[in-house]
Image (cartoon, rainbow, N blue to C red; front, side):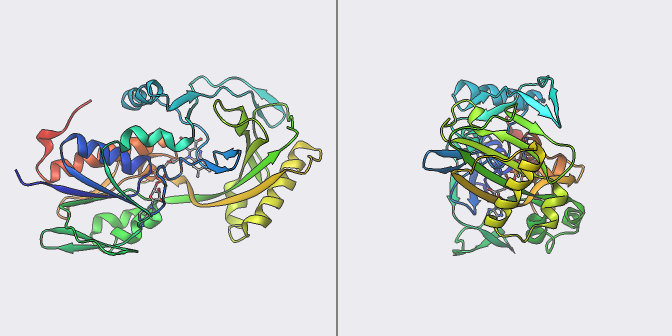
Length: 334
Ligand SMILES: Cc1cc2nc3c(=O)[nH]c(=O)nc-3n(C[C@H](O)[C@H](O)[C@H](O)COP(=O)(O)OP(=O)(O)OC[C@H]3O[C@@H](n4cnc5c(N)ncnc54)[C@H](O)[C@@H]3O)c2cc1C
């Protein structure tokens, strides 16, 4: 039988869930990822002894399939439970009713079981999808790839997916209706450690909405003590053009305002700007496809601002693409 080749653009949870599902149907898959690492917004920034989960803080698993996936990752030692003491504004918060899971040793470990045996071209950004008689060719920042793919899956944030796909089919124009919010993330390390009355605090107003002691997560370095702060959507949008050093200083001051006292000078401070962090208005479909073009897109933005949604969307797109190219019978149901 002719080998059917698929390209997946993006190696976050959605892209790798899609690639894994295609590979389970014996398709040949190549994943293109702009960064050197995998995981996308499932990310841990390391500097010497310091570690900051500066994207997704934890995952929850609600669906049967994602629960099963979490169990596999748990057995492989790539997942651990995080049970922080939590406060909202100035009140203690009850323990969450569902488990909060983190990747081990970092958040990107959560995608590793999906990446096994998949060909991944990392450090290559795809700039253009070029339709050809036999399928799709890719224009990347390291030139035109010398491969034609029968089908293509775009698994990158909605605004970027929209610019790759909207020139090609009417069905992709709806991606422009999705709205994603930015998030400035502050990363601070303290030595000696600080005590703010909880391992994680939420605030319902003001520039900072979340502060978490990364060192309270199992398997993360304890000393110096690492903290991650998330700014609100409104504040992040308003201050999107700050440089990272300035953003870190402003976020630290806002954190102190929330606490009502001054903190010792951190031994490390930094900030990261996520331009497309959280889904504000999802597409409302599990994925988007064009059956005539053998192309589609997936990501959290199809469903909800959660890692689990990215996983479900990636699987859904893989199933649609397999049907489109006549491989539905090879689909492995689980
Ligand atoms: C600050 C923050 C906090 C969050 N907190 C939580 C949380 O606590 N719990 C939770 O469940 N979710 C949380 N989320 C959301 C969660 O991280 C996302 O829902 C999920 O990781 C999205 O996965 P994805 O695969 O759809 O997209 P992404 O993770 O964004 O993956 C897309 C990938 O595509 C790559 N890419 C982009 N453009 C190109 C291109 N042109 N060519 C090649 N590659 C490209 C990117 O480098 C990236 O690796 C948070 C997100 C942020 C930013």
